[in-house]
Length: 259
Image 1: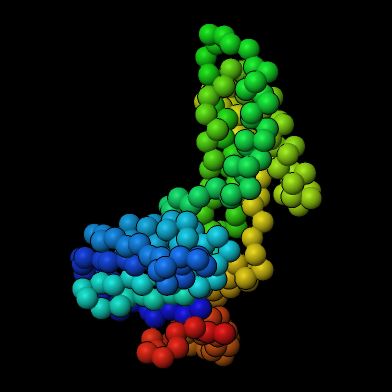
Image 2: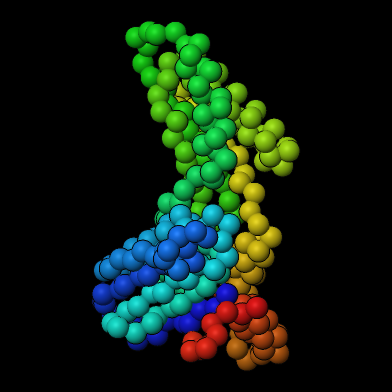
C-alpha cells in the first residue's frame, strides 16, 4: 500500500476536491476495473466518500485504490484493503474527521443470519396493533475503522425480543464464539440493539496497530522539549518515520505499492 502526502498549502485553502475509488472488476466481467467517483467541497466529505465506497468495493479484495485530487493535482493516492485505506486517511489531519464519520456496509454474513432467523419468526408471529419496536445490529471495529449498522425494521414487542435474542445467538455461534453478540433494550428509543465485534483481517489489524502507534508517537513528540529531550525526540521521530512509510511515500510512476 502507498500514499502520497497532501500539500500543506493546498490543505489551507478552499478547493474543489475530486475522489476516485477503483478496484479490479470481478472475474468474468468485461471491464478490467470497477470504479466510482465524486466531487466535494471539503476534505471531510471527500474522506467519507472514499472510505464508504472503498468498503463497498472491498469484498476481501486487497487492490483497491483511492485517489484524492485537489486543484488538478494528486493530493493523496492510497492502495490496499479498505481497512488500510481507512487507516492511511485517518492519519492525515484534514481527512481524519471524515474517516470516522463514514458509513460502511454491514458484514454480508449478517444479512444471511438475519434472514435465517427472521423468516421463521415472521411466519409464527401474531398480528396485532401494538406499536413497533426497532431491531438493529451494530458491528463494532477498532478505531479508526468505522462501525456499521444493519436495520432489521420494526416488530411487535414480543417478536422484536425473540428476533434480537435469536439473532444474537446465531451471530455468536456462526463466529465460533469469536464474536459474542449482546442484546440491549433501549425503552426510551423503542429499540433492541444487538452489538458484536466484527472480526477483521490480519492485514487490517496491522494497519490499525500502526495507526494507534502513530497517534501515540505524535502525542509524545508534541510533549517533549526540543532541547532537553532532543535525544529521545530523535528516536521517536525515527520510529514515526518508519511507521508512516507503510502508508506514505513519494508518488512513483512505476510502482506505488509497498510490498
